[in-house]
Length: 309
Figure 1 (cartoon, rainbow, N blue to C red):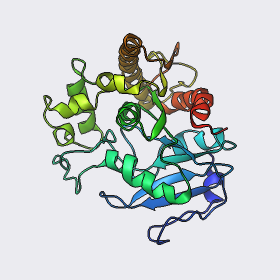
Figure 2: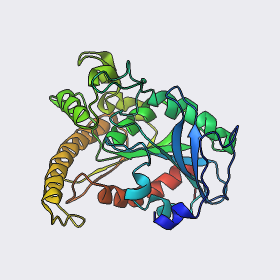
Figure 3: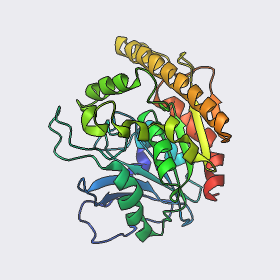
């Protein structure tokens, strides 16, 4: 999405309206502030082009920012669906949250509130969007990395809401050896969050509940899309500065791990007899250009599942 699409559409500020109100035409861009137990959550919305009731939740990655969802500036997601009858819903925030309900605030970084993202995405947000004519039962959900893990988990436990779920370079076997430790380290690095506040100690049942590998049987009958690269630099990787070489190297390792996890998930689905569109690319690292391209590949399946052409 280019800068022009941000500057030519209206945005709603906190407290600007007492209830749900669409302030731009169908197909336009609007920023909503949605009440939640975490406070008002900013949600970037591109309304369906012709007033349809379908929606696609675009979840962010581990380093989600508090001002914008990365799908809105790292990709051309809005342009990809500009003519389609589906509303793009991009929640803002949730760094290191895995979009789940935490037990407690993180004590490592003095978090002032407890993350309750599952409650927000499956109750508070769809209830709010219903005031705009968005059907909570005709929703898709997709995300990269942390967002891919969460998309599969949320879809498994909220089948009344989601008709499509997609994981792009997600970690889909989080109970595999070493993964709990890896998640702990990653969360400390991305915002200084304590994973014990999220799902408790490593033996807590919440860790298994939030593992897509474990909840896979509950995905039967859902339209599924998963994808990953193999960690080898590809068409979007042309590092020049030292920091770019560092980021490329990190992206290579993260993507290789995602590939291994996605392969395990593929086998798991196959043993359960659950069909899924699974795409393994011959190259690609853990970065947004690849996820943007993968969203375009998934688009026909998303529109079919939501009847949103």
